[in-house]
Image (cartoon, rainbow, N blue to C red):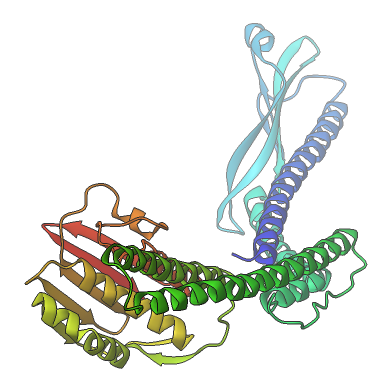
Length: 419
């Protein structure tokens, strides 16, 4: 969920709760005020009735008027009776329904006799009033919430505009390009700090990338050149007809180690370039024909070891990537299968719309097979293995967000690349 959406929802929810609580509070205060006013009217009416009593004689045994009733009571009932108010319901002939009333029950003594006075008056229908207040509050809440949401949304979009512009600049930023990183200016202090920090960080990363790239290029040239010279000299020495057999074996071993060192240097430099994202160009790459071609190129290895190769080309795999890197990935996977499959073993290659899976006969690997993606981790003691093939595969997968998976069970090794 976006930050603006979340903040708007939170502020809207808080506002809604505040409005509902305010509506309930207003309703409670209105009801209290209405009862206080009616109780005051009942007290005034009581005084009017008592003032209108005849000064001579006594009231009738039972006086019933439109809004009050006087009944004689005993002295004991007089003592027990406490003046109080009650909410009652009375059937209204005009409305033809029961309506709420408020009544005052009190007592008085007149010329030595005791009486109970019961005064009632119509009470505002608090239920109807509550419905009116609820309905009005609901509409007010809806209007205020919508207004607050829109104002908050427009205001925050304006306030956060520079942030999203900075985010867009960072999304398009590439350390391998010289395009300037244009950070929009803002009057907000925090965004000014963000812009300054981002600009500094981008410049540091760009310089670091250029220095690292320069180092890789220099290392590639400075290391490969003496290795090539050394290999050339050993080849010339081994062709010397006067060379002794022991010396020839020593030079042969030296040549093998130099070739291994040269391959190791190229592999490490390739991993560094991949991690530095120096293969930025992308295009549509068809993986299926590439897999078939590389399998055919290694056909001589299959014949030497009498391997059974089974290929299932089910659906086309097309990826957006650098073709050179995809070829390296596929080549390393196929070479890994050919090298580590024992004689008369089986290699199965399966391709569908989004994954490449290779299974081959191999000794079951104990422990975590994911460790094979680490550098210089080998699944066998084969002399041709540098322990970097799957590490290169993992680096390419990380560069493009592919999901590699390794499993080993029942004398079968499986590696699957989810594109």
